[in-house]
Image (cartoon, rainbow, N blue to C red):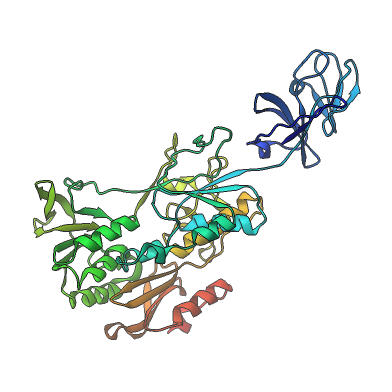
Length: 480
């Protein structure tokens, strides 16, 4: 913001940042501080202007006066000033007030995750010229976290989503090894922070979870540690979800032994059904992975500060040199707020906290293909879609999310693909044979296909996803 004095022959420049200009509606004004000066910020006809806040007669605060059209009247003695130019238009007084050139500039903070980079790039693609900062607890620039559990021996440079040169070219700052836990964190002294979402993985809560050798797979360093410490040693994987199964698959030909503990009858039972879950378990059992299902960890025991064994609820004790928690749950951290997940998030990726948008695993959102049913889907692809929608709505371009959920997991080099939303399904129609590990599964609810999963049956899942995206319905009869 550049100042131009209202006194003839005199010019001066000051620079500053107005942080909350978007809070004003037409016909409103507010006092803001730029450096050590008080400035009157005004919005009229959809445009912002700024002039000095002190009347040149007896220094009354103009913000307490009356705004009408493009001029403000002093509350003390009635002097009037043009809010565009600062010119005095009615007396008493001799001088005009300083006028300022206003440049609107928000500061966007985006907390790292699959949504963050897409959000930042969408802001730039839509001509946003202000400052953008991605803040991450990780040591790396935004990277493909889906690869961490599939191949833990990758070089860090091979999993970066964008190079540092790319980010610099488009003016996207990345602050690594940082964490924000509030809407207004005052990381910069001259401005407030908007649009902040903070995530943290939920830690293991059982006794012994702090022993050396116990790992929660969250970041590149965790994957590197697991990859380095597992070969030739006994590994115990906690969790039969997608992350846990991928970790067990990766370690099956590297660790001396791999044991996997899960609470359900089969892996993926809730999401993909017992048939696919049983098949997946058999695939890993053939690689000498030992399963302990319908069980859970109650304690991790150690010796000299290092993990030695894992105790299960059933009483089974597993020898362990390395423990990996393959869990994907998150908690939301917003300073001063504590909300249940389903009550927090609204349409357009907005939350019930002003200027805070949410995207990714923590987000409950209306799913178009289920009649705007509010759902929580922790897919990488969906999180990236959230980032785009959040950015557009930050820019006052109301946009609803209409993406079709699409997911994949890799076991022993083979990919299971999934699209749609199968929660509440009542039946599965199979094409091909699960036991032959070549099939497509069509999930039925209310006589229509609501999701599909496949193995070695491409592009069946993509076709179902495209039918859903174009608003078409695949009935049970058609599936059969």
